[in-house]
Image (cartoon, rainbow, N blue to C red; front, side, top):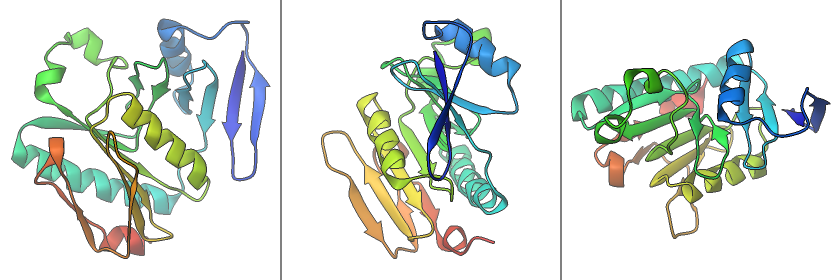
Length: 202
């Protein structure tokens, strides 16, 4: 089995012990032993280790989380999760979006102990934020993966290009450029993300 280390130019790989992909339990334990790393797994079982976020990306993502959380608490229908929250998807992948929202009614099916681990579901709404170490093509592929696994709405935010790519099931992505805000729909109808500070950065 291999571990994949993405960077700006290439994806380096290192071998880890074991000839087969980790199952969900083994993967969870692997992540628990390596808490300082942001680790994901693709549908083929390959392990992907993402570089840590820089200050500007961290600031932008904090702004996104703050706005989504403030709205969600007022709305009351669901819960918001930040970038360290990982999900086991139907495809077998284990992914962590930069921000996500799940309806409370879906969370009720899980026990307290289950909620302390990676949930086996796909959030209804996900946001991914492109950082300087990300490649746009890979970010778009991850967005398609979210939709294929059950997300009802996804936003891919590219702050350097001041563009939001909107993903919905059964439709091609919509590209919105030079906008000051974007409004939610479907599961997050009523949410509005103000983008001015995200575009400006630090």
